Image 1 (cartoon, rainbow, N blue to C red):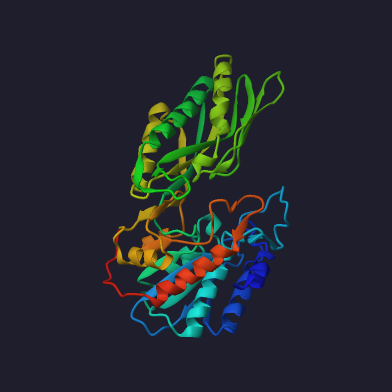
Image 2 (image 1 turned 30 degrees about the horizontal axis):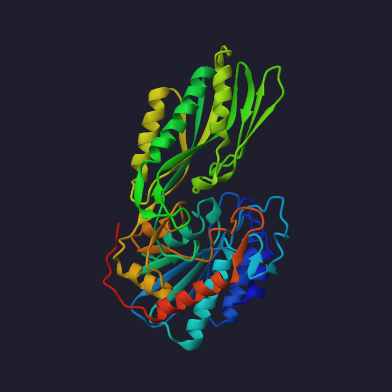
Length: 435
């Protein structure tokens, strides 16, 4: 495993918001792959901000009938503060490699390259492989994997395959992923009505949690649930000078700041977590509701509130139906509110008995299959009906998107060796686009 190459990747702060170092990282990856003897193409997606969006396609031609797609990404979320280790200098301690992106997903890049390097040197693959290393995954992937999967040449899709692995998950076999819709609700109303709306959205979330998937989450050991988390970006009305929490649509806020007129600011502390992992969170918005309800009757006149919501479906659910049901619900409370969807990711699930799922289980030694709680870039494969799984070196405790993110070196090696076994033991199957 080339840990030195991982270190060079981590040193580049490829922040998905600023698009920093995108070109430098893609060039580094391209040089590495070409030095290993692979054919590399880089496709740059056009964007309104005119910043480069390079996406690399690395091919292993095994002269086989079928093709496996491997997908990884090199962009990262902002490092933030509070690290014990330097975020952009790889630190190795007790079998762990610390650094922003070490797990999500530059470790996946290294594992995938290591796997196809081994297959090439042994000339042992029974399936063609295309490794797709993309940008912008952290903000939806439309100019990353979405761009590659939408490209056409001479009227045909440039990238096609018979099965796909999104190498951006834990070292298990995930055959399904939750869908996600993030959006905003803006409303002008007296404070009691605003608090009532917020309270009823929380109630709706509790009802959503009763919608269960047939798949379990590897981290919770429970079946995946549907849910809604809500972030109150700004509320001001009457006795409430302001109430604020959170800035990102996919983050359950860990704190809520409340300022009542004539009083000092109150800080309500919860536990912040990604909305895809509700079991890790304690939502400060819900904890602030009792106080807001107490002051609601003291307020006169209209106020204004803006909510960000994050709706998660189970892998089997239809995302459009889930969005429509939620919109109908909130409009029964206030028909005049503004309701807008800003991000969406389709969920998916493939049959447990699909030949590709069975091959993945043999390659990894897994007896079970799992579902992902969060939306993933596998949606772009699903749109084309390509059977897909998620699998990668991101352990449950890797602290992705958090401080002191790390990847276990043994997981990097396991992912690489599992891909090698999969390709060496590949059994052609009858093509049947699912979905």
